[in-house]
Image (cartoon, rainbow, N blue to C red):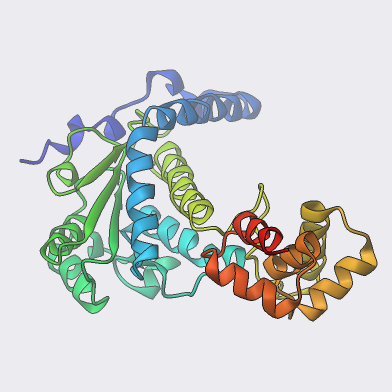
Length: 304
C-alpha cells in the first residue's frame, strides 16, 4: 500500500531552509550547500546494498547481459546520462548500458505530463527492450513509487533478471519488487519537493558507483587509469598517451610507437611496453586475461 505523498521524507518542509526567499544571495547558496553536504554520508550507509548491485551487474556483463535503467523525469535523465558516458569512457558497446525514460526521447529535454503515472508503459518498455534473465534492471525514483518505474520493475521480475531499486524514501513500493534495494533517504529538499536537488545528487553518485565499480571489476581500469577509453578526438588522443606514460613511465618516443603499432589500443600499448611483447601477442594476452592489464603483463612475463 502506498504511503500518502505528504508523508514521504522527500515531501516534507525543510526546517533548515525556512524563509530562504528572504535571505541574501550568499546565505541562500550556503543553505543549499549545507543540505548538499549531507548526501555523501547518507550514501555511505548504502554501500553494502550498492556492492550487491555491482556484483550483479558485473556478473551480468560477464554473461553477456546488460544494465538497463528505468526512470521518469530527473531520475530518467540521470540514467540516460550515466549510460551515455560509459562507451567513450570505458569502451563499452552502446547497447550494454542503456537508460530508458518515461515519455521517450522528448522527455529528455521537456517534461511529458502524465508519462510517469503510466505503469503499463513501464511494462511495455521492458518488453520493447527484450529483457532477459541475463540483464540487470535498475529502477530509479526519488519517491520510490513512480508507477512507470514500478511497472518496469514488476515486468522485469517476470523475465527472471536481477531487479535493483534506487529510491530516496524508505520502505517504498519499489522495495516490495526489488531484489536489491538502495534507499538513500536524504530528507527534505531545500525547496519542498524539488527532488532534482539532494535526491538527484544522491542518485547521480550512486549511478557513478554502480558503473565505475563494475567497470573496475570488468578489467577496464588499470591502477586508477581508464585504459579502455576511446580516443575519439585530439584531447583524448593526448590523454591516451598520458595514460600510457603514467602506467609505464616510458619515454615519449616509446609511447608513440607502442600506441601506433598497437592500433591505438591503450591496453595493448601498456602490455607491450611493460612486457616487451609484440602487438598481436599483447592483444592475445589481453583476450586470455579477460581484459585485465595486470594479469596480461604477468602472463607475458611468465612466458619469457
